[in-house]
Length: 233
Image (cartoon, rainbow, N blue to C red; front, side, top):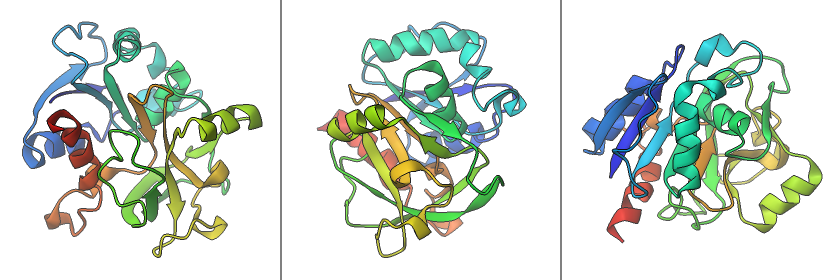
């Protein structure tokens, strides 16, 4: 699988993501500057990643300006043609702003930036990045965001539930989905979602920061392994 990692002005998790994909997962990676528009070297078996950071300084709303970067029109077309797109943290915000994912990411309910390890668990195995994950296991993965509170109006949220578009839920270390385990006030403890076609994924936690033994945590690696397993099925 080939990966393209988009770098926006203000991205700060691009190098982490590139390192994990290239050096840990041993995959081909191409760095894509936000002003590029040519994704002809990628096909539907490949994946474009929008990494975390503070694109354009998070002015207006997080992701609201990056959504208009030249490359995003190509990313939208790539996704609409079946290509896989994965947004992490700020990348998730950009995907929601661009309409590739439903809902919105609002300010955390405590109105503060939160940077800490949290627990999440996969809700089902029906998406490429969750297919190999034990849905009963709580994964410890860090978050670092000020606008991570997922929100969708009732009708949209119900449609997401019906279509199994909720991928990850915040939980405690034992895997219990509780309000106390919700770090930012996200509706229904939602930590990650996908689109109806299951080829666009977004999540606030950072699996690339939890994918190496040297960091003391490899819980995030299973997400990358699940995505790669799709091409070897």
